[in-house]
Length: 247
Image (cartoon, rainbow, N blue to C red; front, side, top):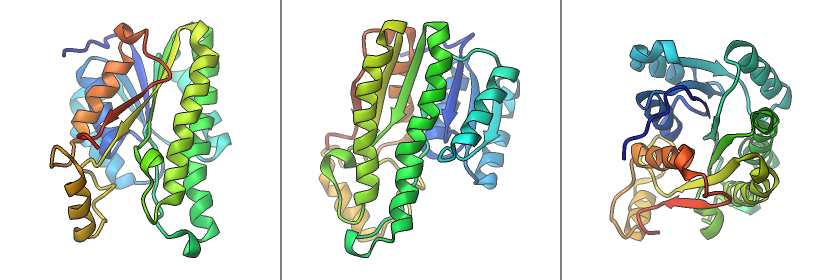
């Protein structure tokens, strides 16, 4: 499919590495202006900027912590002052801090929930305030099937991802009358640095569970995001679009 987002602006939170980077680059190639954000990895952000120098006129990279409401507010004030309107929000921000429940530190639970779930609330709340005025918008949240299946050692991550799906379905009903759609894209095992730290035996175990017998690519996830962000996808909202290889 060929997408054309010329004249549209997309905010991609967590948009400088992994799946988020693939989403940002897909929007750039499709003609959109992209505001990509990151939390703290300057090296990855700089590498992303350099790799996309050809789109410098349509690319803005900003840093903030999605878990801190004040920083999210400041970011949206910056967007309004420097870019005006935007049409698309993709939230790809997320962290993992794995541990079994009996040994999990309270800080590991709080950090994951604060970034993955509370951060989703922060950025969607402020985006919705803007999109409601424009009476049009596309919000796509990158979730995970782990919220449905659960994995040992990832209860905090699974809880945050299940919460994102419930949040999406509720928000979609609140904003539908303003022609704003809200959907999840739920990637399975995607070959990024997000799963690179898993032990080899665990990676092999996960691979056996995938009917297509391979990990997905970030670009395959990005394609689904662009599909849901397109004007033509106006009748899809409150949904979870799985990109899992058949899990």
